[in-house]
Image (cartoon, rainbow, N blue to C red):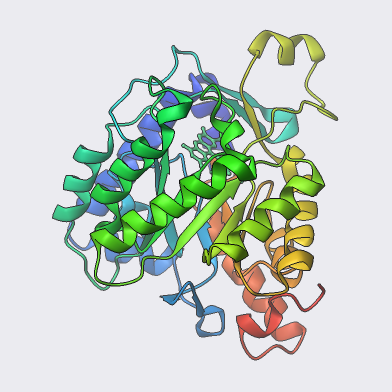
Length: 364
Ligand SMILES: Cc1cc2nc3c(=O)[nH]c(=O)nc-3n(C[C@H](O)[C@H](O)[C@H](O)COP(=O)(O)O)c2cc1C
């Protein structure tokens, strides 16, 4: 059904316009009294066996929406209505910014992939903090992660102050906070993954979050799949040293290997981060490496190329406490989360686990 809609309508539209249209419908449905509950009943049935606790948070399941879909925190409840167990908003930057010129989002349908160079288009931390503060949280409201990044015009040398500004504004509204140093679309951002730079950045963000709230806001760092294996280890060691709560792996890749799309088309698209199916193997590899290095001492959130319940299950067995998806949502549509949840529940029972947490890292 969604495949027909995708091929007849969305596929013919500019991908960013299609995103805005679909997101508008989602928000509209969530705003109609009664409809939100009805849609949630169909798309977000809860399986008690999938309930989990991670980062000190109670979640109806392990499967969240990755950052970048709801950059401005405008549709959190609608996304939960569709079945996501939690929603990561952002990336939010210190200052509002328009992002890169359009077109900046491209589909590679034959690869079940996307390339984007959005460039952190968002309304900025002040406005988004105000929006989060006004949110009415009800029984259907999901856990909300807030992902922060650097404002483009801020020099690399001043990055810490920019992240701290966002932290001061947003920490009080975040169930968890993510320092994003891995988007390929802000010049120099990924340099912040070097441990010498990352240490003072994460230390300052941790301190700012602690100063902004009376309770502990879990802090995670999101890394790129393009890091060398030793650098993955170095970030893991740093996260442990600084007492971070977890790592999100991975963001999009600058790599273009193994694509089915014609090389000329890929070249024509140009710069940007590749996401979706082609990211699957590397994302799993990074997860396994992180698990080996951290031995269950950090919460690991696996994202990148998850398309099926089996993909999500493999991540959990490999050590992911939580998983996220983004690109497959575009290709699979609103029944995707339901399918993944059903498949996860079935696998849990098939393999004789009594709870999700029992399965985490079982194959590590
Ligand atoms: C259009 C688009 C925008 C994205 N924007 C962000 C972002 O602002 N911040 C971020 O941390 N990740 C962003 N991502 C990366 C995703 O959160 C995710 O890490 C990546 O797409 C891999 O997961 P997937 O293969 O399931 O899509 C974006 C991805 C896409 C496709």
